[in-house]
Amino acid sequence: MRAPRWTAAAVVLAATVVQLLVATFARDLPQFAGKGFTARLVFYPLMMLVVPLLWRVLDRSGRRAPWTGLTLVMLPFLVDVSGNTLDLYDSLVWWDDALHFLNWFLLTLGLGLVLDVVALRPRWARAVAVVGGGALLALLWEIGEWWTFIRHGTELATAYEDTLGDMTLGTTGSTVALLVLVGLSSGRSGPAGRSRRGTRPAAVRG
Image (tube, rainbow, N blue to C red; front, side, top):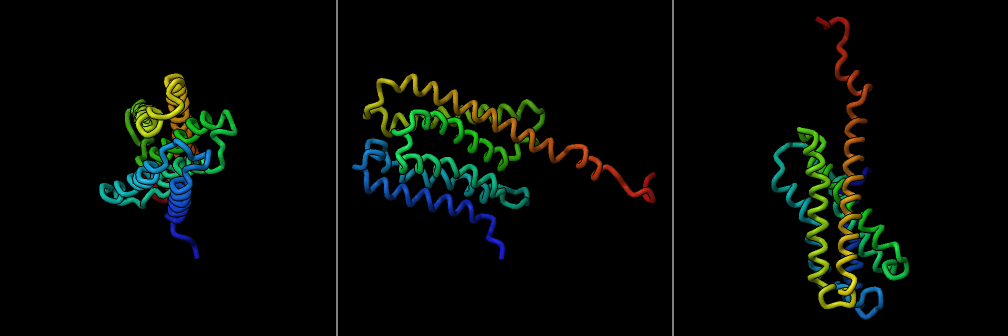
């Protein structure tokens, strides 16, 4: 029996919540200290569920729920929490930078699939939606980080430079996501796809 299409999303959500609970109640461990896990326990599950819930409420297209895209939107939260659980942010100097690129790639790729941005016309609107949207989300994320733990934490002195770098990496990840979305669209509408759609049997040609 095949698993339901939403299984992967449910696993991602459950794994994230379990780690958030551990981090919240073991906040004295060095990898969790001063990183606002009480706030994350509240806001991460909400942010993970908001896109699936909006799809459920607002979609009128009649197409099946795009669970691949919805799972990709949720995945960055699991990656972030897992990085803290494994103490990768403190043990690997490049981890934080890599995650800002990777997570924004996953997030905007997922949103692009959910919103079917490759269908937008004119074509430059795709870049506005994916790259511009990614940059806006990166800004909102940095504001959230500052509010939850930077303003009263130990990283305030380096926050300005770090914020600029994080937003640049996030926007770059969104740009790569746009290229992947365009590539996927081109693959679906390539020569083979066009020939299948555009060829009629000889007996019915006019």
